[in-house]
Image (cartoon, rainbow, N blue to C red; front, side):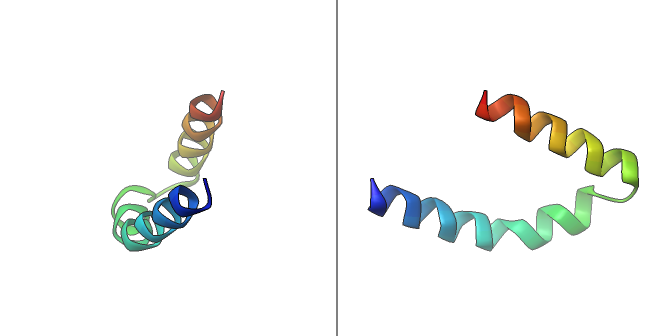
Amino acid sequence: MGANASVVGILISAFYLPIWTGSILAPIDFALAGLLAGCHRG
């Protein structure tokens, strides 16, 4: 389980900045991203 968490962490860090800067342009985008992330964890 620890190895899977490490891989996920590396992937998130690699894709975080390009996705964030390209898609989160307004406060409503931030709210929508938070809502979708909350639903995903479910």
